[in-house]
Length: 75
Image (cartoon, rainbow, N blue to C red; front, top):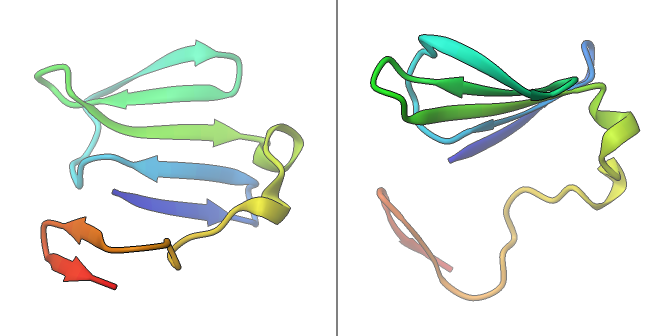
């Protein structure tokens, strides 16, 4: 899973699967769920993120303890 913030367009994106979305469902105005052809969630997009999310607390990485991922284990 990857998290990206695109400051120039104020979009916060959570990539759940590294796939291209086949279609999108607007869960609520400005929150889009991107789906694969077979119905799996591949990403979640939040428009106008700085108005919806406290960006000052957004942290990527530096998780406490051991983090397990498909690429191995890190501290």
